[in-house]
Length: 210
Ligand code: PRP
Figure (cartoon, helix red, strand yellow):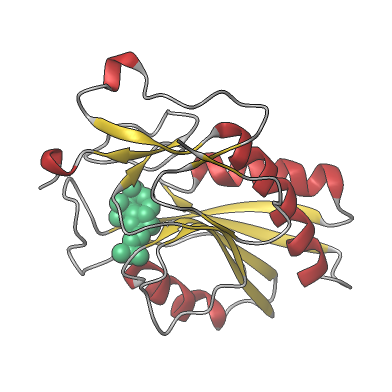
């Protein structure tokens, strides 16, 4: 049974069994993915609720600042960033700009290659930067990005949706959920290019991973 969560004002710790809102039914894996996915870990309702909480934390974290440049890490951060930035603009005094950076290190595997391929972004020299990333696993991607971006922005902060709590040596200013050490997909995250379009975070069956 999924744990029912009602407080989304701070990082939500997700247990192995997953979480849902009281108003949501017990979540089930969609029929077409029944042989590939173990379970729904975080429901759409919980993602939406936590994004509102994150937007409040970010607005407080950038108190006194008029405008931030949101640098979205592609491809995985796309859905999270799209929702977060719209809530930020709707509910806070911050103005937002949008930029992208593309990083990749997993390819079609379930483990990091250790080498992060990065594509250059627009000129963001001297701007207030919010780096938006979907997940921190080994921390290899964020380490490279933070080293690169810290020097450029005058005020640099990092927001991640999911953190497995295993990476060391990186600073996370805003964390959506702390999750167990399982391989997840959905809501922008993939395994070998699949599952990005799912509106919830799901756990991929271990036997499928290579
Ligand atoms: C995934 C994810 C993060 C990174 C996290 O990207 O989107 O960027 O891995 O893992 P790490 O903390 O071990 O570095 P991936 O390389 O799969 O590219 P993608 O976003 O295009 O799927």
